[in-house]
Image (cartoon, rainbow, N blue to C red):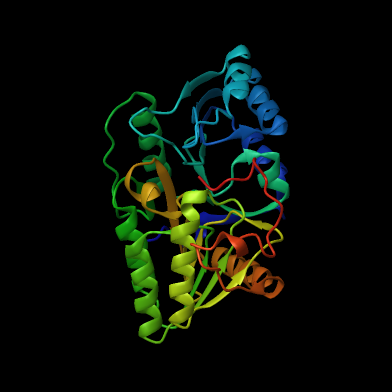
Amino acid sequence: MAVDAPSQRLLVMPDDGGAAVVELIDQAHHQLLLKQFKLQSEAVEQALKRARERGVQVRVMLNPHTSGGDRWNDEAHALLQGWGIAVLWTSDSFPVTHEKSMVIDRSAVLIATFNLAEKYCSETRDYGVVSHDPAVVDQVIAGFEADWHRQFFVPRLDVGLVWSSAHSRGQMAKVIDRATKTLWIQHPKFVDAVILERVVAARDRGVKVRVLCGGKHGLSDWDVYDTFSSLRVLERCGVKIRRQKRPKLHAKLILVDGQAAMTGSMNIDRSAFDVRRELGIEVDAPQVVQRLIDTFELDWREAKKYSAPDPLDPTYHEAGELPPDPHFVHN
């Protein structure tokens, strides 16, 4: 069940930029809860400092290291701690916390695909849903408190939130299964056979399927095999595939029949479903869905038809790709 339509609005990156996130932080009067995979934005850090100085209770959880071992948040952790902001590393119950959420005054929550780093507010296509639905806000708070206190968390599945590692694969599958006319997917990784089969089944029942991918850019060497193979299977099944290069594709979006969508932190990836802390949201607010449609259509027009190369033949893996960027990796 998606949350009530009037309670949602959409942020689109890079269109709205980091200023939209700073504006949300600046609206806080009492409490701010932030859980983030990567914090490397001076503007956001300064906004958190201002919130602390005006008496807002600020608590921040940062992911300690990526799946590859990179420690991107050490500097931000030390900086916030030095300002007297309560900051913890995310729960070690998960090898990675990829969730990107923020709760403002227990009345609004941001659930995003973007990291709070300059690149993700200026160069990448990303989305963030701001919800004022009390059930949604309360559950994100409950998830935050559980991870903060290192407690087990069992989320409700009837408020439109999609949690990992709790049934997120099944919830995504149900969203795809509801498609009767169109299924538009904007995702960088395709590393899960269950979701691949669901997309193929949609095409088999006559759904018109479009996939926007990012090619190889940002994929780890081990994710290339599954993603390229999955894209080749989808193309053989009649799915239309294009590669998006500008803005760089970091978004995670599924649009169904032009009426509903799912977006959030989780990639189409086994580890995102099964072992990491992730958070997504289902949306059906007409103004949110329409902006998602408009943005997808813009990106689709700008993208080029793509046939993934043989994953076992690296000779062609770099053809037409953007230059490698060590700071742009799909975890």
